[in-house]
Amino acid sequence: MQNLHYRLLAMLLIYGLLKFFGGSFGHFVLYPVTLMVTFLHEFGHALGALLTGGTVVGMQINADGSGYTLTRGGSHAVVLMGGYLGSAVLGNVLFHIGARYRAMTHHTLLVLAGLMALAGLVWFESFSSTGILWAFALVLGFIALKTNWDQDVLMFLGLTTVLYIIQDFDVGPKSDLAMYEQVVGVFPSQIWMYLWLALAGLLFFWNLQQVFRRR
Image (cartoon, rainbow, N blue to C red):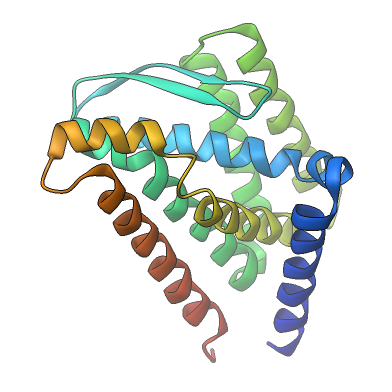
């Protein structure tokens, strides 16, 4: 458990240095995290549609870190919320598995790679988007099958994804929040933004408690 504390602190230090002091080099090194956040965000929209009886028409992941998901049917409110909160849940799951379940990290990376490759094929929107997803999937597959980095990579991706999502609360889900205000109402988008942030923060705090509780 003590080793886990040191590894977490090292990852937080590396991420902080690259994010806030790394400049263009830091942006380049953290570029895979940006794409991971985008994929999980869009995959969260897709899951929201599928879990509420809708269908996914297409998914686009752009090289600049933007993206969109086209859905039909299902609960519009859940689909919109699934982008930010869904990606927060998925990021926490990746971090939790990486931190607590060493034997599962290999298979988790392969499942994640398979989901990316499948999304690029089944929800095809453009060759560039599918190329990005398949390239990412190949890298994850290589790490899982040919290296011993699977646990550290999964833990780092999960942790930095969650941190990125929390930091991005007032930018990333902006369009989703505007539409959520129209669909659900009750509160203005600014209030929903902080409610989503609070849920994401509480989820991460709870996850940390579960990760570091004594076995």
